[in-house]
Image 1 (cartoon, rainbow, N blue to C red):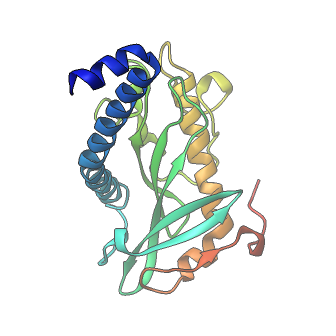
Image 2: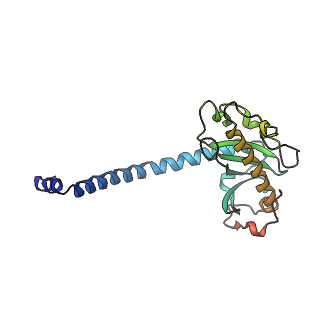
Image 3: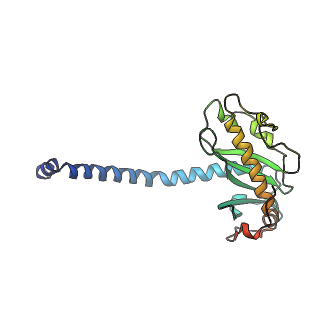
Length: 220
């Protein structure tokens, strides 16, 4: 920077501040561009891993990550991944975001078999307290496996024990499991409300969007 320009900026502090802000913005923009692709690849890898786990018990010979359909439901668009064997849909998986846990919303990947029962549930992302709420992560405890095999028709009391339900709460972290239980229950209702269309959907990656308004009412 020339001495004349520097002197001009010192006489006009607003210009100096603007130049500093512009420089910071440029560096942030460059950093975002450099990391955006890496983040996208990492998110895709996490999703593939979650699908592998949640659909491992569902017979399929396709790649569910490439067989998707978008479903509009209650103001949200849900991408559903379909697991097929010989062209027939044997189960689906999708991400479902809970109401706020202790640290914020929790994103689950829920796998559901053709019979409407939970194949498996995994936590895709969360911000819960280490050592307390993070027990929802299968790497920390087996608590999340307690949903396997349950459905709307299994007589399950959908709540934590403190609320009269069947699922254990964590000492000092009841809010977290309560949010997850409610989210899994809601995801089963979502599947039931769209079941026929999801299981009958044509093979291949679908571009069509199913409208909730065209669906029969979801069960209570």
